[in-house]
Length: 155
Image (cartoon, rainbow, N blue to C red):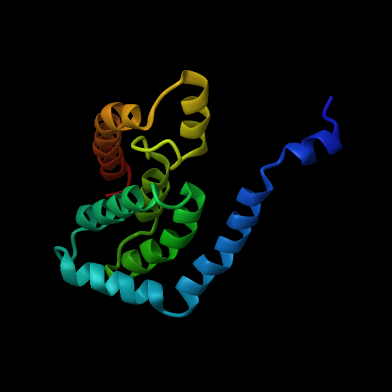
């Protein structure tokens, strides 16, 4: 049986507070027009009109940002950009949002990009370098398979 006091004492409050603080940041990115500006910049840089290219860019951004910011925070901030990019290209939003979720979840390069990595680092006696050695092939394979699955299902 779950004891409420025990459960509350074991919550990671700094992470919960950080996530709660990131929700308004994601909302601000959307409502201030920053998401639209970022989407327009991404469209100007990349091949125009290609849905696969747009989804790939969003996935790559998620993979790049997540090692420096918590994966949930990455998703909260990148989702409005993905929606704006899909709207700018007159494309369905689903593949872009799936790319955000995937990009924020496949950080195998660092022990702190995802809480599971941090947990396994301590339990398995791994070092930071171990994540770099084993993580990049796994992350690359996840990106390729994820893009293939998104393309088959939505594009």
